[in-house]
Length: 111
Image (cartoon, rainbow, N blue to C red; front, side, top):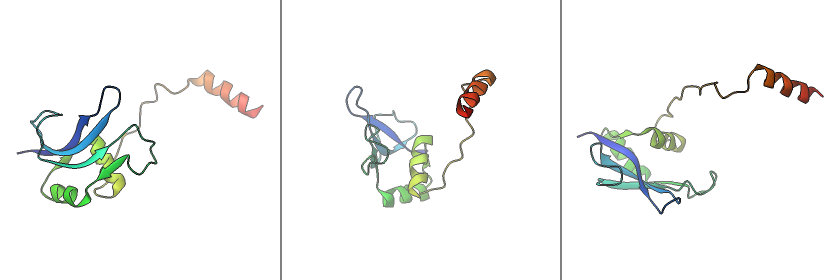
């Protein structure tokens, strides 16, 4: 059985709230899960204490038993020091200002 640590959506429409759960990888996102190990409230400011709540003991237990965290949850666990921080590749530079816009910004900053 492949076990994942992932987010399960809760909350009302346009008011997201997520439970961090241990689930079989084949079960639906908001369906059956094995254990609830935390919560994530994206509506709170990023520096708020209750934005991400984790049950460290249970998460360590499941990681030692081979559970794999999804990308978003791996970021949470890495920031909490429960596992290695994942490495993210650089974002594409397609949306960066082009050459002439950079020149105008440099000229404006120099003036």
